[in-house]
Length: 167
Image 1 (cartoon, rainbow, N blue to C red):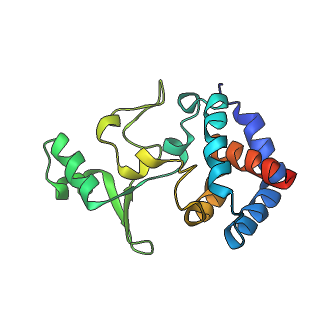
Image 2: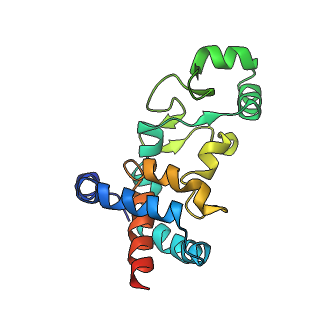
Image 3: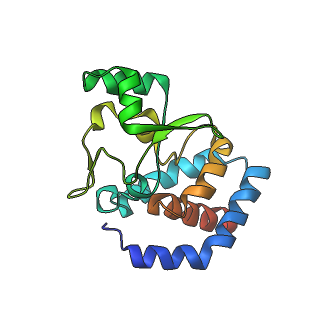
């Protein structure tokens, strides 16, 4: 389903505090069936959200580039890792991460929200939005951040809250 950004932003503003508090509770006291709930909800989320109609992750966020990502992507462009970093990346001293210099991502095709380096994209991009990762509690702080930008994460938290509060 195509993402309606206006509706998404309104829902986020309305539920921001409630959802973030819920995620904190899950983080601090995870239910025993958390992974089963996430595994069952993930397909439901993807039936409702079309990432290509959104692209917010590439427009509003930046992945972290590992040393392996930099080597792989720079080789694709027939560049040295140093030249690749100089051209497209910046080093975040606080997080100790290599990140994009600009937003939206330089590899995003804005006309169709497709990644021009999809087959060799950074591992951080390949795993995004980390919905049903094992161990889920290690990703709750990431969901707390991502609900503002990612309709799929927002939908997962919305469904998880409804499911877990039912029991």
